[in-house]
Length: 361
Image 1 (spheres, rainbow, N blue to C red):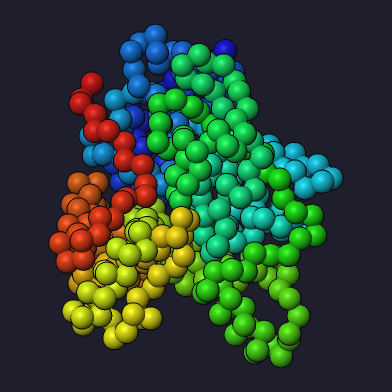
Image 2 (tube, helix red, strand yellow):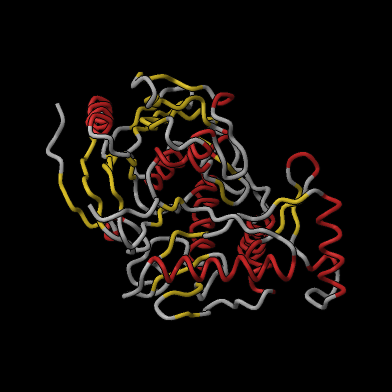
């Protein structure tokens, strides 16, 4: 049975940006049958339907959303003795990571502090500090919108890539209901990200300890690193109204990346090639730092344009200072993209989902 459907609901307060207009309709979905009933209700009325999680990766237009917003509220975790954990889509992400670390299950520890819900993680193929959820996902339980059938998709059917998935490329096809992860009981933490390695080495030197880091220590350090970049939700942080990283790090063929690095050095943007952050990516490509390019394009941390700007702690985070509009935020994002493209020939790709603008109903 479908719960009551609310009309003309403000969406801004349901997002971390605190921006945007109202949803024509909104319903809370606490189980699979409600999700299916809501999708059917919207289809019968010729309305689009959008699934809302924690709102931490969402940009809502000022005109709002002309359809049904399905807010995922289903909760629940199930653990098995061999390290498999299943999470309902509405389960808050960071408490889930904390519980896996407490149980000494390796595989998610570097993803600590990321806001949002478990159901969103396979959509973005959430990643940070050397880990991606795709590395541990065993299956994703979804509703196929074409048939309203519930199916379990194995990893090879999810089309995972860097901050990408089948769900993101075809957002109208599936609704994520639950995610199952296969973790490593008693396994070591993943310490392959340079910044994390350096921070752990510094912590070990300060403590005079040479032993391997524990899962809990890696989680604590990741949280500290994220907090230093205003990437942990904190009501007292002036950079709090954001979606985290607004742009993805660009991945270029190795020869193209090397030519760009040479131009950056020749143009005085870097002293040597080693000063340009570049990391190996799949297929022999190189992943460059979008934040580094943004700052070299002239957009310093703390840059401000009216009620929006760039975080004082991380150039990848666009922030809303209060009293602004989505149009202002998107204009700043476009200004940054155009400047980076003009100066360096690199197209930055936005990471958050931007809802289609609504006509007034």
